[in-house]
Structures are given as C-alpha cells and as structure tokens.
Length: 415
Ligand SMILES: Nc1nc2c(ncn2[C@@H]2O[C@H](COP(=O)(O)OP(=O)(O)OP(=O)(O)O)[C@@H](O)[C@H]2O)c(=O)[nH]1
Image (cartoon, rainbow, N blue to C red; front, side, top):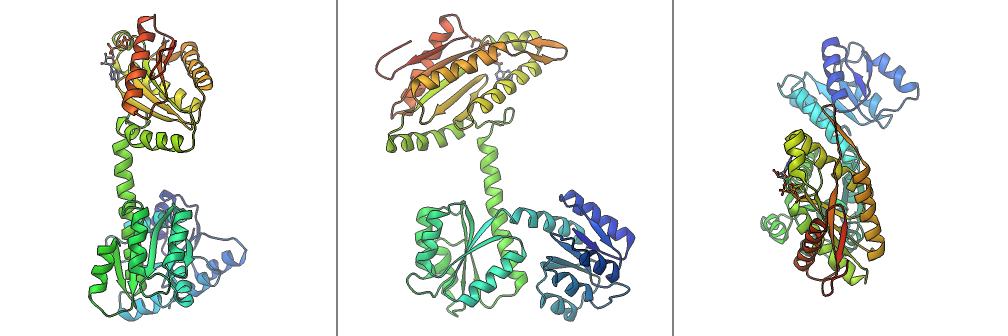
C-alpha cells in the first residue's frame, strides 16, 4: 500500500492500520515523493491519498495515483459538499473525512474489505452494454471478481455453472427473461444465505422494489444511484452473507478439534449418500472411539485428555482429507467414506488404528499412548441404520479386546 500523507503522526497511524490489515507499506510525504515512487515502476494494490499536501493542496495527488490504475482512498480534512462532489466525480474507491472519530476504524475496515473482495464473485445482469460496463467498473474498483450476463436467462445459466457467485446485481427490464422472473428462478437454485441479489431499475413504479424483494431479492436500488449508496448496499449485502456463513460455521464446528460436529455430519452425510447412490458409487460409515479414555483423564488430567482428542482429530484429517469426518461427542468420532470399496476403507481404517497405536503424545513431560476401536457399516440408504450397525460393530471391537476394526453389513454380519 502506498501512503501519501504529510503529517508524520497520521502517517504512522495509517501504516499501523494498513499493517494490521495485512499490507506492506511505502510512505510518500509529498506529491513529489509519491510521483517518484509511482514512476519507479513499483505497483501498489491500494493507496491512501491525503487531499491536501504542501506541494499539492487541491487533491492533485488523486489523479497522480488514479493515472497508474492504483485504487485510491482519499483522506480529507475538508468537509464541504463541493470537495466531496469533486472527489466522488473521480473513480476513487472511497473518501474518508479525517475529522470523524470513526475515520481510521473505517479505513481499517475498508482495507480489510478490499483484500477479501478479491475472492468474491459478483454477477452483473443487464441488457445494456453501457450499464454492464459501468457496474463492472464500479465493482472492479472495489476489487471484486466481476462477470456479466445480458439477460435473466444468461444469468441463470451462469449461476448453474458457477455456484460460487456470492452477489448478483440485476436490472429488471430485459429481453428473453426480465429481472423479477430471473430472481425467482435463481431462488430455486440458491437461498438468500447462499447468494445475495440486488435488483436495479430506472422504472418509476414504486411497487417494483417490493416485487423484487417478494420474488427473492435481498435488496433494491433505484437508478440513477450515487456511488456511495451503491457501495454501501453492496458491502452490507456481502457482510450479511459473511455473518450468516460465520454463524453456520460456528454452529457446525467442534470447538476443541475444529472438525465438524454431529449437526455438520447430519447436514452433509445424507447429501453424500444421495450423491453416491445416483453415481452408483460404494460408500460406508465408521464409528471410532478412544479406548479407556476415562483412564487417560484420570491418570493425566482432563487437559491431557483434550490433547489426545485433538491428536486423533489431526491424524484423521490427514489420513481422510476427502471424507466427512465429525466429532460425534466426547471421545467418539464418525466418518462417512464416499466412492470407496470396503477393502480399501478397511485397510485405511486399520492404518488409522496402527498410526494411533504407534504414536506417543507428550503432555506436561508425560508420554501418553492410547488406542482406538473402530466399527464399520457397509452402505445402506438409511443413515440411521448405518449408524446403528457401525455402533454395534464398534461394541464388538470393544468386547473382543479393543484396538481393532470390525465391519458389519446392514443385512449380513462379517468380521
Ligand atoms: N478430556 C476430555 N474428556 C472428555 C471429553 N468428553 C468426554 N470426556 C470423557 O470421556 C470419558 C469417556 O469414558 P467412557 O464412556 O467410560 O469410556 P472409556 O473410558 O473410553 O472406555 P471404553 O470406551 O469402554 O474403552 C468420560 O470420562 C468423559 O468425561 C472432552 O471433551 N475432554
């Protein structure tokens, strides 16, 4: 990041904020220094620009930065409307009045946002080439990955192929398929928590915003809009998705091991089973339980028990990167294997058993060794049946002396 700022204390505050957001920084304390840095051929992912510099008092540094295609954030002590309008007529990322108490917190948030935006895909759906270009420029300035479609049908086709799109901005009046129909079709594919949709229209009918939202849009913007409002709406909608994803992630993750929890397992496993059935792939389910775990807690303490639980989670993550692995509760784990023959899964489960048996965990200068028992169920359409069979097989492993793998078929028992 290039920081253009003549005040030393403010420059070091911005440097600190930028570094916290993960940027390396260069400082220019005047227009001339900024010009020299930019002319040296060095490229910057963003620049903060002080509007008023001793050798450039009227925002001349803004054009200097923008001419090099560097995204620029203007910091200004001038609060008047004329200055604001002058700045916003230029393709800057944003402007921040320095006087407000929140200015530097806002800058930090904006810098972090710009980094995250590089990984966010946005689809613009509009039949007007000029509008597509304009919206793409606005979004690219905030570092989003932008794709375009020229009507609702093309937008829908794009969404089917690209489920990782996070935000759609769509016009209403379009040939082939209009915006309202497009939104309601898109909602058959993705929920409001998966893709955010903002409807746009220049139509004066007041009911249009309600129709967009009732069809499944998250938000609506009337054309013409000012850049600031556009960016505020975009960021607000993206942040909503991020909050929901974070809450879902927390609700589905086990705190100690960072593996999925029981809820995660019951969310993912039925989908995986359906996938395997439709693709005629074999699958199976394993229950894993640490042997005599109570003794580990009793002898070495509860914290040592936690380290053992985290250890087995790490080993499973390493050995089964593509399986659905979950901590079911306490010292019990469950794994769903997709597209795997029984021979290969049983061999992999035995590798897990042997790796755990051979490992030694050091905690508070004590060396801890432990073993695990495993029960395996071959495939069934009924996940509850598979769980009960794997549980039964696990019980057999325990009663037969622990530290072993037992497999059972849903109809026929094998060992
Ligand atoms: N440290 C630690 N202990 C836990 C956790 N969750 C459950 N436990 C303990 O795990 C132990 C499970 O003991 P049991 O169900 O009797 O089974 P076990 O001692 O492993 O014996 P077997 O399963 O028969 O081999 C209990 O003492 C629980 O308190 C946890 O998150 N951390």
